[in-house]
Length: 431
Image (cartoon, rainbow, N blue to C red):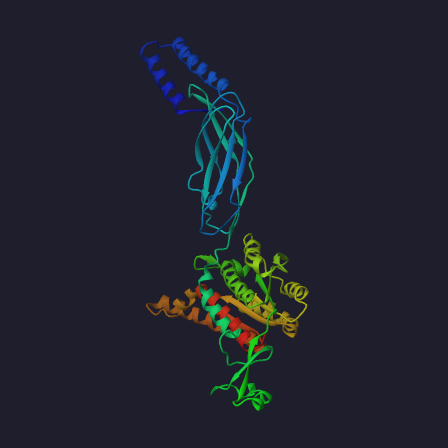
């Protein structure tokens, strides 16, 4: 039950009448009796809220930053017209600008209400209860009740690094032999023969073809296809740190999506593994046409876990999923303690079987602090920042000496830098 503002207004007017015209208990009881009778009549004549039938439809997924529409159909099976209001409750991060809707449904009819959502956070956004208030004919009181009408809208990663894809695809086409290439490396496939041009690698000269032709002929090469690329997202505590406006995990996801799209266009097979102390999510054996949708769907519900990642367990999970030589791209931090105590001991078994790339998100704020000299406090901040940068460079050098390719870049540069590193490995035949 709920009382309306009209009831409060009539109660105030009744008090005024009692005070001026009929002071005393009898006047007060008479006014209250009339008001109470009106309230009870409204409650008796208001349509039942429990008997209403509710059903949802609409969008189930939306890219972060875009808008989704969720429809709620309300059917009135009773014999009285429903007048009132409805509140379709969603969590604040769902980004619903208005959750209240006026209602007027004649008997036997239904109305469809639409709630627009613009999620502000990645992940699943679930609808809360639907609360309906049905007014009586006098507008003094209303029946009120709630219905559980389940619905989930998944906010997908935005993939903002998509803008870097055309330039990298153009470079990939050059490597793929659609334009002339002058590189040759281990693990490349023979493409075709052409005439020698000054600057070509003499090792590419085909002497047998040259003997049959009037000019010196060289072989052109293209990168091999059907390689295996395994993207490993470390969802441990280091991924929870915010750099700029987003956690490190979100930046790693964006870079992983660009690399996955590029690798699938190159004819490579791409899988995903999210791990901290256990497997949080994964994508395996998905074709190139469904890959991007599968990746964003698997990444969307991931959240950083405030635990130290089990590197040994992560390596075991990688080896179990990659039976042949693969490119393993590990998105993790470059903290000295985490790398030296966790990652380095587990690297040998990975490096023996796979090519390993470590991608890390650098904080541009550290570089800004390192340049500060305005006052004594800024100088101390600069010294601390410079020490942090030196430790990070030392960690990267440790990994590099063990044959690991390190990509360490700020959030806005990590995705294109990782794509460039992949293309460089492709061009040199090291995949």
